[in-house]
Every structure is written in structure tokens, then in C-alpha cells.
Image 1 (cartoon, rainbow, N blue to C red):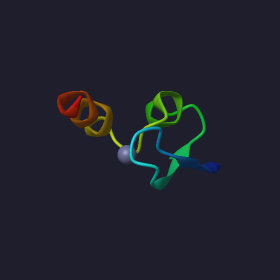
Image 2 (image 1 turned 90 degrees about the horizontal axis):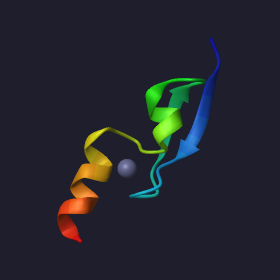
Image 3 (image 1 turned 30 degrees about the vertical axis):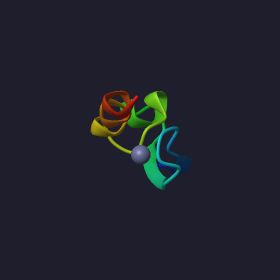
Length: 41
Ligand SMILES: [Zn+2]
């Protein structure tokens, strides 16, 4: 199983995700990350 190193669209942290995983598709390090971002806008 391959892991991709991605950069979170919100906080800029690098994180690893399996290809095709939800996290990779969303582009965030965790499901909570974009949610927290919206709360600050
Ligand atoms: Zn993040």
C-alpha cells in the first residue's frame, strides 16, 4: 500500500495518506481541520 505525503490545504502541515483515501481527496490533514477553519472566518 503506497502512502503519499500531502500538504494540508488549511494549516499547511504535511501528512501522509493512502492513495484514494478520503483525506487525500479532501486535501486536509484531518476532517476537523477545514471545520475549524470555517469557524474562524
Ligand atoms: Zn490541517
